[in-house]
Length: 347
Image (cartoon, rainbow, N blue to C red; front, side, top):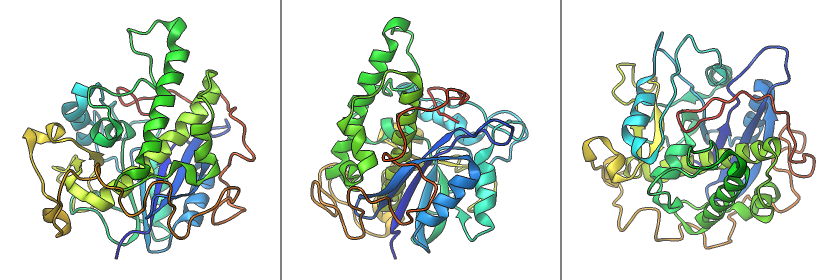
């Protein structure tokens, strides 16, 4: 049995308090790469409701850009240290998360979902083939670890300002970098697995409209991009397993399936000691050629598979809380706290 739905959550890490919750980017993709639903939620209640309503029962893999399992009293999780060790050359690193961290919305989200039948998977036994499953990812490792996206030298500058860019030029430079990234996301339509950015009106707007310069509008867009990256990473993991990805934090002494890990796409030079893994070791099926780059995958360019949603359709539940292009402008509060994994991961 194969997973039928892949969901990406760019989770706002803060929770509680009296202020209105920050936005969370959400995206759901089917096995053919079509975007079934995408948009924004606010707070754990909305996010949980949308997630449960969008999942395919017994066949959904969710990748969340937020710590899901935290068991270290202080310091940095092993998986976060390994981000810097494996991806630092590409200017990607990780900040620390521990039991003393104030913003652990991912831990709370997992607790809620476990109560209604979901499970966490640390990836150490390869990708799941069924169930309602959550794992942790980090979009920056996808950007520099997946050759399809073309960031072979360093991370794209669509988040934090590099020292080489003058402050006066930053918004323009950032918007241009974001537009380039969106173009590369659109190019995933012909990869294995595919991502059909044009298959949903909200994700299609990313390519149709230039990236905004205003900070609040830009952050709104960035959240959706990261959610789509998470969803595609889940599909990549499901399709190619350890052939294309590595499990950061895999050496944890935690029981099988319970380790704090990050599942990250990886080039050969980003693996520990240049380790090599074959597809047959993980999936039992031979892999030929350069995985995920040369072939169109299960659908041709621009083709959407069965079960997709046409333009103007809001997805599986017209009443679910996700905000879509028809009802949300590119404006949002500027109160979302800035937190990045080195360079960077947003809460």
